[in-house]
Image (cartoon, rainbow, N blue to C red; front, side, top):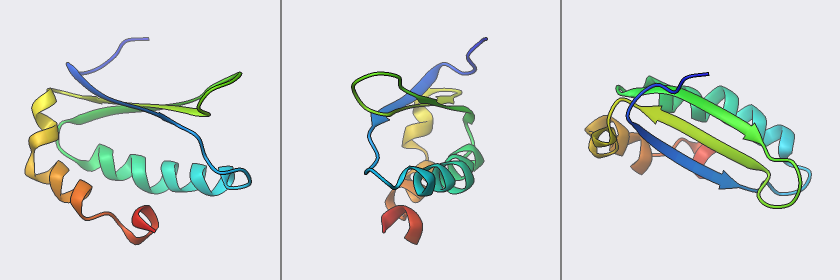
Length: 86
């Protein structure tokens, strides 16, 4: 499986016990969709981690690392939705 783009955003994290379903709903139906709507974001992947350590690994591919300086990205980052910011 190939990887699109020449830049990436990588995050790994846990989710509070009992909130996994809410997290997956939010991440699948809001967060990933918002990020992929930003010009320059080309791919997103989420992995569940087996064993110890953070539960999720998130990867976003971008055409170029400069996407993270773009007005569109900074607008989303600095003005999260109520669901994201709450």
